[in-house]
Length: 84
Image 1 (cartoon, rainbow, N blue to C red):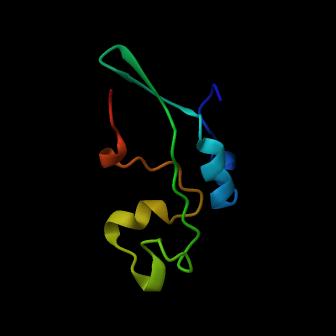
Image 2 (image 1 turned 180 degrees about the vertical axis):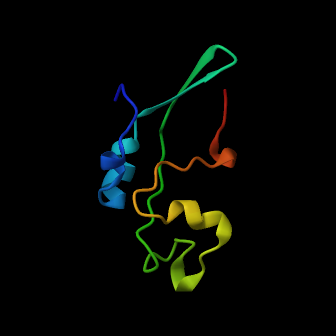
């Protein structure tokens, strides 16, 4: 993938999107320096029936709201970013 992902990309079944994000590049320009990372792992939660999902049993928290909206774009957890 060599272009920003559209909302159409994300408006598909969650597990399909999660699989297809593997290998995609994350690009950011910071202070004139282009930073690039490759997605090597994803998580995809399929709603309140998913036992691993924060929304199960009505447990939606304010910090998780961005991950449960229709057509949400990628959420990157700051704790998941590691460097070599």
